[in-house]
Image (cartoon, rainbow, N blue to C red):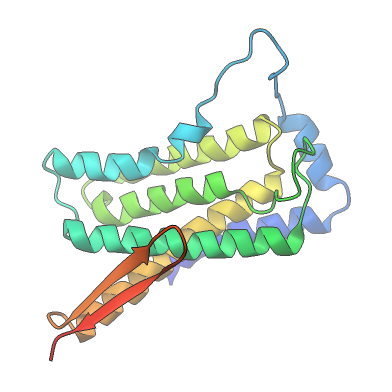
Length: 209
């Protein structure tokens, strides 16, 4: 799929950075401008902006722009993308146990913030990007800003944010592909929805004969 070209390239870039000795450290020294100890510290907004593309998708739809999927369908797709991405991100974090640049924790690889931001940007692109390419550009620019800030704040290495972006995009594209494929086979008989509670998460399937 052509949608795979960019995220696969990002994942390869992440791997190259990890493979070349000292490259990630050198990149960090160039890009990091963390100033949390400074009295002039600026809040960069990454904790909030990671959700901005998703919020924009629903807000624009509420303002009258027609999304490609109905509200319930796109909400199910988004939830499934979040669940699958969260599984991949946390599994990878537990396997790699990479220390963050600021040594705050050993769960740096990949960036959850960036994965969430790129899920939202890809979701926005799928649902409303057909109306204007600038809608898609806005989502991806916002997600890219979140990625940059995670490095600038010394919370992640460059390879972490590249891999986070790749995971977010790949899992969202895969969810659209799988969901639309299944719904074409059972357009009126099958209901698919995520099930999430404090103890577990899963998928609810209901088929009407």
